[in-house]
Amino acid sequence: MTIFLTPKQVMKKFNITRPTLLKWEEKGILNPIRLDGGHRRYSQDEINKIFGSISVQENNKINCVIYARVSTKKQKDAGNLERQIERLVKYAKSKNYNIVEIYQEVASGINENRRELHRMLKRIENDDIQIVLSEYKDRIARFGYEYIERYCKSHKTKIELIEQQEEKPLNEEMVEDMISIITSFSGRLYGQKGAKNIKKAMKKMKIIDIKQ
Image 1 (tube, one colour):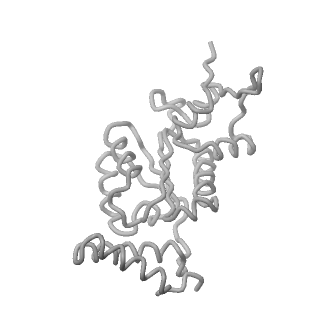
Image 2 (tube, helix red, strand yellow):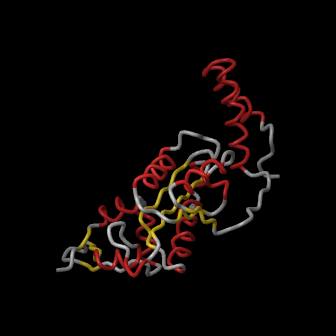
């Protein structure tokens, strides 16, 4: 008997947003059926064939997780995070990988307390995950990438980057990371209130020209 999932169940399973789900439908990645009243349902069999299942490795496919990140809400609102996920999903499909879960978040690459990154590492520790897919090293961490890579290797998991070199102009993302570093040190020296004031002043003074 075929099992069908609701849009909410699919979004929860793969940790994606509704706009991303709809975009995948437009691109033909998913093909839901329509019930009376226009409600959409997704075949569990189709989901497993496309994205795989952690419980069953079909045809010895490799289980992978996807990690996508942008630094600012502005970048997310511009669709950067969504497009990043689409590229990674397309790459995984071309490699015939089982996509077990998609981790996405808006956070600085130097932030050590990223919730989704910690969730991903926890799953690697507990489950049979062979590949972590991401765009660049900096998506996973601006600093300390080698420690994360070593941790993954200790659990027989490889980090696979789909782009080997990232263009690094002085853009908004790097500026935000630099501000985060200064704010962090300022917080230790002058307290949280002082750090917030310094961050506010830096942005107001436009110390670094983001458009350069």
